Length: 637
Image 1 (cartoon, rainbow, N blue to C red):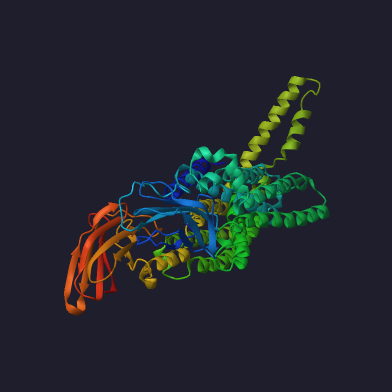
Image 2: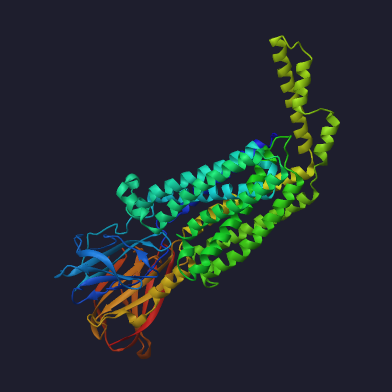
């Protein structure tokens, strides 16, 4: 290793740690991949009579436990009875106690979406009239906190381990079969297997706490572990562990029996057998992700899952092979340099992987986004744009590597060996031993020591001559740059798997902002309007809901609820409302509601003098300088 290698490798390690830290710091508390699209009673509704049940409708099917849905009275006591049950499709309901008193009730939900991610949230409704409530911190901690960060890190390590394991083995079999005997490459592939196995066990232990309490003490709760094993994600993790046992056998044969085979026919047959077995095991491992995450739910899961498997295998072949090539270029011994032919073979393998990534990535982007606007208006789309940019940079650097590969030859090493005039270390050792008295142990030891010194000097000279090749040096630099970008790309990809797809997010926002009969109910006669807003500042997006009861001429009771795009209560500094009847040039009539609780404002005796098509405008201020006014028309009276 030359003097510049160690600092570069240290820089690469620091980059890995920095990216991992940024990934964990930027992770949201709970990645809601299923969204609440409807409820009965609806958020903010003031019902005249107490409902007998609460029903929730999600954008996809979810998994529920006995306490997934809780309904709390104004004093914070639960009023639900029994466990939530599926009503129809994606709607679930829980029964309520009879004779509920007047006041504001809080509904909390904590479920697991079909793509394995926890979904948590809360909202309120009232019976008879709103009231103050003692319920605080209603959003469950599932998916967040320390456990959420550790789970995200485990996912990152599992992806990295799979990529190094599968891609490193593919590089050896398809590009550089001599590399099976190189200790540095062996350690790399075995390290990938260890990382993937350890991360899988870690995720299995964390899973129960990650989707329920979010408490680290529950990581070793055997009851929770038993529940996890009965879920789709638990089955996927156990399947991954079983496949890793087969992968261990594959690695043992690759770096054991395979390296000792000398007969060309036998080695060719074993290469074919290892290739077939390796592809089967790698595809099985990739399927353990596809069967439990985004690809397993939503549009066209029957097509999306095999596409996802191909996508992950292509990533492994490219980035994992790149890691193995980088290891070979820097750590392979001087007598076993990576040949130009091996680099050219990997270049072709990487090019094919890129083509597969483009094809499968285009399909995945369409499936997860659904519209061009989702690229810029959703977090998933923004992360996907970052991933596309990183892939473009990586392809550009790979183009430079291909140019260096085209120029690379092994003549410098061969010429260097010819100039040294030295024979291999084994021959040198034999010559040294013959020059002394075989019967004198001291002379024999000195001869052996001299032979080792000569061999070390010879190896160092060969390495210097090899590294002096300008083309090889350029290739090493470009491959190192590729590896650095690949680390960042892996972090962004991991974040994508934990982010709500843009299509789901936009559909949930559309459902929340749609008048859909204005949210009225026959029992209450109340009018409810939902209006999305964006103040343009940091954390400035949300939805404001205005409820008016009984929505007629004269005095009305008004409630205003502000929530974030994910459905959680949003406690903004100020909310103002005004009513304007433009047809009769009345207004605007300003109303300054009182703050009741987190994300909830109300005003009594809101007087509307005449019937008509009133314009209801709401001004929301999210900071000292960021505010926005949104409005809708509604027929009143």
